[in-house]
Image (cartoon, rainbow, N blue to C red; front, top):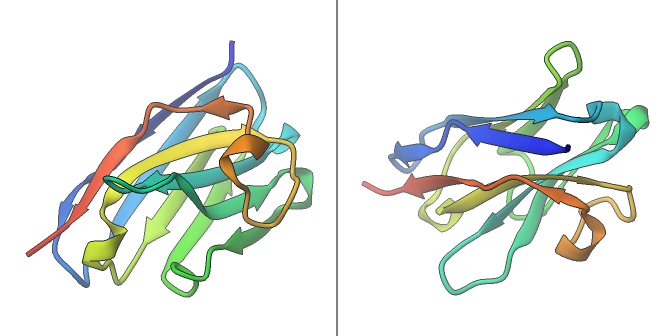
Length: 124
């Protein structure tokens, strides 16, 4: 059974950093593209960063490019999202997901498996 467990969310001040973790079980991470999505209150879920399966390439939404970094640790079957220079508009529930690589920054219908999410709040 494919499962994800996300952790690392919390409250952080603008300009601060957080690192989210996504531990996968039931499959090997490099079988699929693994992406982080986020959903803010009243908004649609959007893809923010993707680590593309065996090729190991990364891609980012324009809104986070240069601030967020996605890293994969195959030994731990874990994907991390390092978030720097956080802004209030980054406040959202962040989800880990996996699926076939369809486009550089996935949309929700591309992905087959989802975690339950972790809340990130950026506020002073």
